[in-house]
Length: 114
Length: 223
Image 1: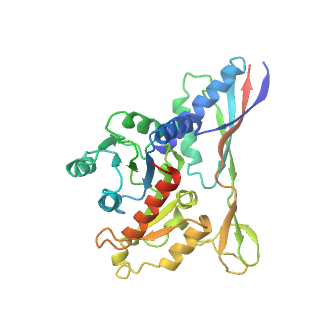
Image 2: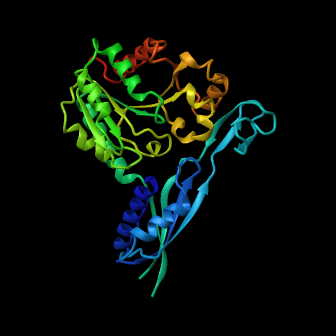
């Protein structure tokens, strides 16, 4: 259900931008999605194909650029993407803090055709 | 035929965030401290709001917006206590959004200068993405769910303003690992206060409500 609502937002924004671009057709939508933003790519494309029928974005391909969240070790300062079941530093085992990224959730650009 | 790239750079949640900002303006004008309470089903959200209400009702007006997929069960409980309450049924939707809150605040007697609790749909995933216009995002976990929620559902913990750990009275029986739970929270949200409470015994409720009333005074001085 969450993906459905998110997909509707994506479609609305894409159609508005396409109208502003001299009523272009939308061929591709480039999305930037952080690791902490909980949406499933396949599910969004699935809903998009259904919701975009008979619109200027029908058949458009969604491209997902995933941005990882980075953690930094409080002891050795190593910076890393989380791989384990905990957040601790993979080098020295100390505790870590989230330091960057992961919350991105926006439409970067469209590929359109006039 | 011309194929070209058009820059958009627009937040996918922008439509929701615009309405959330309008809600926030209404809350500020009316000096309502709004808490968006998010937790799994069964964590104890309704019991927690009830315990909070009982602890602060002599000091502040209070109101509740209940979000559930279906039923009036929780709203009926608050109505029976004499608390102004609105029920939102999402009809299958897994979260509340700002638009639902905007409709709800005009449909019941939300008192000025009050504390408003919004009980979100039981879910640790989707509510994290939807701002409602609240001043405080409260994330609740309970000992029966295990220590691992911050590791499995990190997003919702990263921007919480307070973490509530409920059912602390049975932590030993369910072998809850508080140290690992706290480490997970601290990795995601270094400064956030964690209140270990029991709605059943009342343990920890005073520390939590002292904090809440202090936040109200800080946000609305002189109200």
